[in-house]
Image 1 (cartoon, one colour):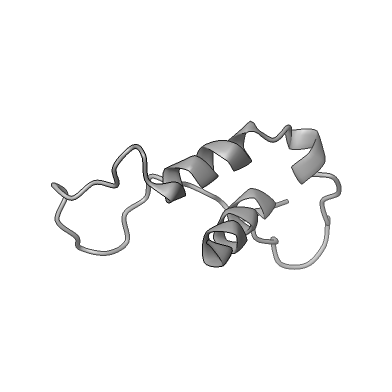
Image 2: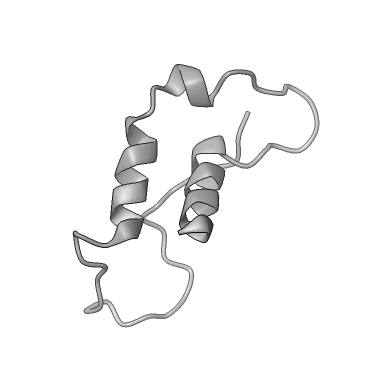
Length: 67
């Protein structure tokens, strides 16, 4: 299947009092991609080899990079 994908994980030591505002473009992109039906994003999963990256996460990264 896909690698574990969690938006709420913390890997770096960052000040917790800094939050992304609710009107930031990253929040809008995340809500947009999350609103896409799973049937369209997770069309076909590979059953062998290393787990693939989550397609929803990759789409968010690509859209944010183009903004």
